[in-house]
Image (cartoon, rainbow, N blue to C red; front, side, top):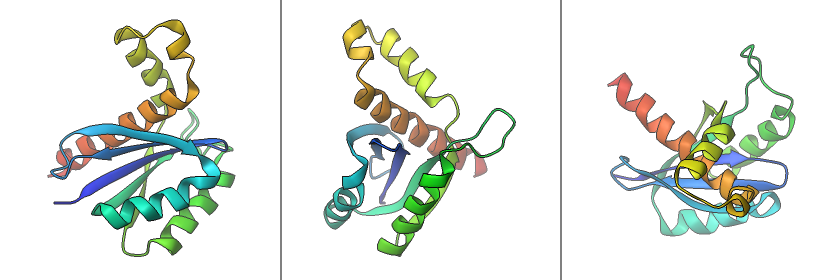
Length: 140
């Protein structure tokens, strides 16, 4: 099988998570500068077989897209153009940052480590990916 990659896209930083080849386990991969994400993905996709890229869909509590869609939509269009053989999907990312902070707290990370925004973004991408994979299993 091939991997699924998840992206928590932000203006400054992008959290990236990836599944194992059997698509059972999500793990944080890295957090990179938003300007470098397409270059990073181009390199990664030459060495790993990825069938789908899942991008966190920011929604407000009323289920309407958030203001950040104005920069996420062009990014997703760039993804689709640059990697036409890889399926790109949105997946609801509401509360992932809150869950990431709770995960860090439960995991016993010190306050200084919990303030690391890059780590929060990577964990958020991991949560997006795990939730996405669970939703796909529920469809079967």
